[in-house]
Image (cartoon, rainbow, N blue to C red; front, side, top):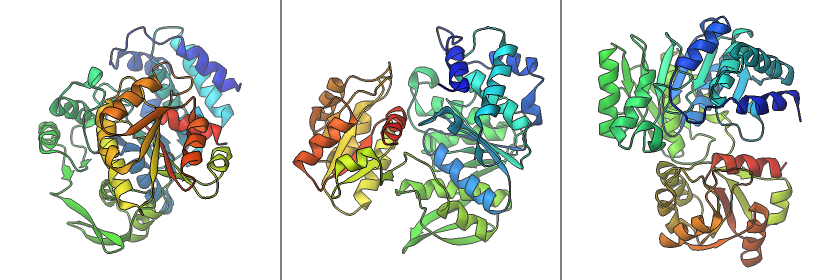
Length: 423
């Protein structure tokens, strides 16, 4: 166990018994730390239900292609906590992470605070001590009361597509959830708005209007569409004729559009726009695994894919991706959290898969039992069974279908476990 892992374990014990979304604990801790959030490079703040991470990755690739040094904060991590914090383009070093965590632990002095809040404070502390040109902040949950939402004057805010998720915290209607996401909009600060349902867009525009924040919305101020073997982005400044994103799936065209709109506002060049869509990397988003023990287990004729989507909109995006791929027998290996709409996630996938093997997410107390996942899968028309773990599921599938396309899906927590198992 690393030094930072030991500190992270201690910080987990400070978590309140009930999560109440509030900024009070963040304000208290950041004041005790001397307000590092006021000393970080200009912030681009990103909220939304789906596409935040991919959009952030493309913005970062575009900025870095222009020579900018970029801090980035994202969650959750997949294989190790360090993935959440990038300092000027590089994953935070163990010594820097441990030092920031220890300082936050001491400043908090044992008071109740959520794990996300205190680790976000540690990220701000690290960002404040490393020179950079921009800071990309991804919202953890919602927006209005998220721990990242203590930046008074970001350079830019971005809202990716909003859909139903986390209803226990954000509300059970699209307008309520959109209102929480729109909480990152700040007075006079431009907001880039990705593709939205009309009722979500109305809420976002109303919030922006009340704060005199200029809106740059998909379909009104910018557009993007596939064109032959590439795609075309267009706004009032002109047109970018670009290749398709290297991140796989039709939904990544929309994410690319949102990233390009943000980059356009930041003065990006044609070369930066091209780099944004061709050089971005974002694991566990329809990622092809090409080496490692699980790939060896699948054998030379099978394909092994990994995706961390976990809500109905994610299921629809994944279904569209499968529909656009060359036809091949597809089998799902699925593990989900018990807080998710599993039926809504699986229903669009049912027509694209021959079977589903359900597994528990190892080490995750909120995993949905594999038997429950299999039962729901069967109810939406999938041939469903269970397995002990991902390795057993893969072996069972290739024993039946050696040339299968195997897609492990349903949770970022499962995706992280799979990446660790696969080395």
